[in-house]
Amino acid sequence: MASVELKFIVDFMAGRLAKWLRMLGFDTLYFKEDNNARLCQKSLEEDRIILTRKRSLANKGRVYLLKSDLTFEQLKEVVSKFKLKPKPFTRCGLCNTKLTEVNKEDAKGKVPLFVYQNQSSFVHCNRCNKYYWQGTHYDAIDKRIKGLFSNPPHSKNT
Ligand SMILES: [Zn+2]
Image (cartoon, rainbow, N blue to C red; front, top):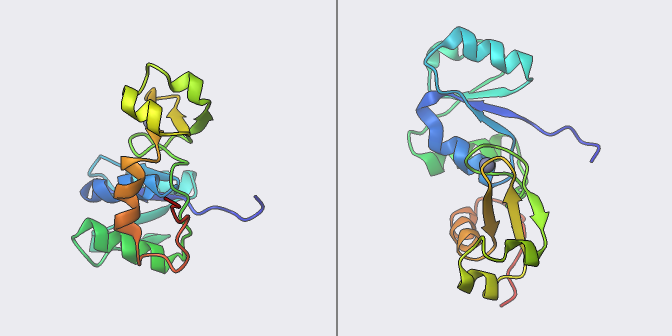
């Protein structure tokens, strides 16, 4: 892809936002320390936009000040501010690693049997060794992001 993807760094007060951004496919670091200087340095080094509630960071470079305390409202703010297009199931919500598609056969024995029998595609995080599939995970995400994007990523044909 030619277009440059935006990258984010979320400060320690908004960890759930980081997880949601990742689940929607956006490269997001979760910065767990309460250390403004280090946070700013990291954002510069890796060219990441800081997402924070801290007013003291307002003029420290590429910073977006979150208005809401609520995770989902924050997600809405960020999506509309940066005009993000979701790519669910491309990135691990736990560690930010890009997910790789695996053959159905390879997921055998690694996911619950009923999942294996009912799903056709699986993705895998090589770092967490965790499998994801578009069943319950997808529905949960889908519910939350309805109305959040003008163009929903997929529509499920069931
Ligand atoms: Zn992972």
